[in-house]
Length: 259
Ligand code: PTJ
Image (cartoon, rainbow, N blue to C red; front, side):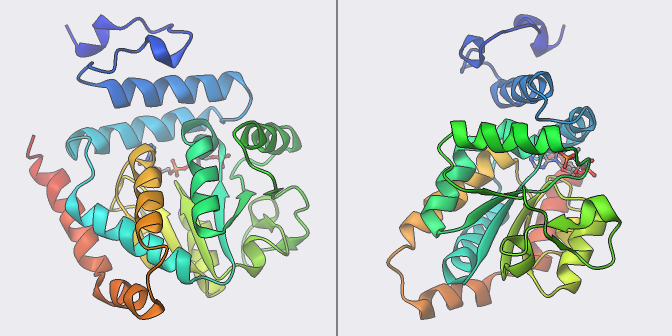
């Protein structure tokens, strides 16, 4: 018998998932993704992505490892120093952490932009509405009046005054081609991805190998702690963050499986 047998697969509200369940976070995540698919927010492929992420998270011990916490602090420092920070939202991100992304955007003065791998007008609208229901005032990504160079037409669509003009972008659960294309545009990328071997975190200036449901509130917490910090202190945080070490530590934890 697995742990999952103790919780019905068809819970209607996430409050029905017992918080003391040993796999609580995983059950909550799966439930939110299922709801996202039902609401037309999350693509079916998002379920596969979630399954992959869940396997890595299991091996990480479903916790924020110290190197991920350092990456989250560096991400907060980058966002506070940025002139035009943008948080990119796809169907999984919208289902898992809509209110948390709105809070992070408020904490660092960033814009929110819907940017989809499997782009349809219906999903863009559904995600923008969902973010507004969670407190977002301005949602970008609907204009799609600019293009990321060297990407196919649909995936290249961005807002001219959003991702296209951004200096720092948070791209969670991002596809490797787009991460490379954004890097080629000179953006500072903060990638949240549980797979440290995936191309996107390997390209990122700040790779955060952590579950997005833990990572985003933690970046916001660091940003609030650092809100009054001098620029020199923020720059010291950036200089002392070692992206290679963070990726290596996450891979070591996953391979060693110290559970
Ligand atoms: O909504 P769309 O159309 O933009 O599509 C979004 C998905 C996620 C379906 C699309 O971008 C995709 O197929 O992504 P990939 O190539 O499957 O990459 C997703 C990455 O996110 C994988 O490396 C997963 O391990 C990781 N991942 C999945 N769930 C989480 C996660 N990382 C952090 N937190 C999670 N909860």
